[in-house]
Figure 1: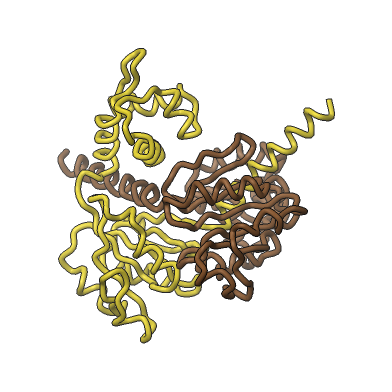
Figure 2 (figure 1 turned 60 degrees about the horizontal axis):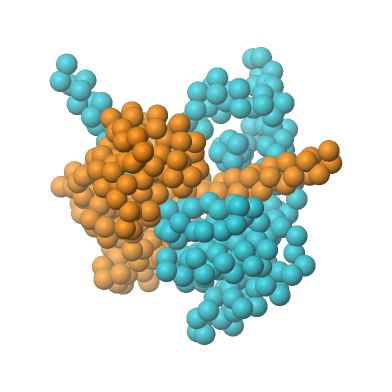
Length: 204
Length: 204
């Protein structure tokens, strides 16, 4: 679903409808899978016309819980955290950064993207009245579990971690990892499969 | 497969075997799916003992084309590119950064992680004799397509892009996107599903 939304948002610049096969090509799926996935949402295209891009985006957004604003906090304001803080994609009315935290005395108190970085010890009281906060972990691997523990204590509902470490959190907290090595492995897999496929064809 | 490898590498610290149910729990899959996926690789666990962690990791690594060293270049040495350049996960003998490129005169010629950043115009000649290079795009969205074009011209086999933009590349070049908004959408989806599930249960 998030993948479809990404494709729709990239694609929509101008177009008002999209066919299942176009969406399938963008999302790297088959048209049949796209139709099945979207019918699960109650969205059906019109034969010969396709899906209404805006209505479909709205339906997916609602399903993803993106019909209300989500609060984010960033833990770790090194190069990665700073890049994330300056990332434009937050500003689309769906996510907003409400806090930035670090432990380094040289970073705490400095301004990143117009916001003052606070000490991680302040996180719990800062978020005491927040309803549903997502935390982004951008600290070195050996500090990632501690950052996760602090986020859990502060009541985070979900965590997105860039640290290549499995995190132990209570069952009700969702964690997603963005692991560069895993992404590179996947890329390597596709390239290797493609090459061995070409070699087998050449050998015939 | 990359996900299993990530879990195995996190897990292996000490253990020599792992059961399909343990691996399933780590990878957020069912044990049956794990057994099916791994049997596709020709790897079968021993009943009551599980899989040999080292042998399984090697098998997956070979399948992913990670039994040889892969060369990486980073395009864009802002905060994100610098964070990636300093990322420790490269140094495990599977990937190595062989070049860093930017267009900003203040960045070109500077040192990042012990390597001098070169101008993007030098990329093609730098990589003329390389066999299989992966490119990482860490430039602003409006420069991402140009970075992709340069990587394609320089002969990159795969591209990992952090820019929230769909890239147009020839069919033989693989592209993976790491899109922060998409990851946050996915997190939001799980949290929303969980909450509405709890609410439905509470309403019964």
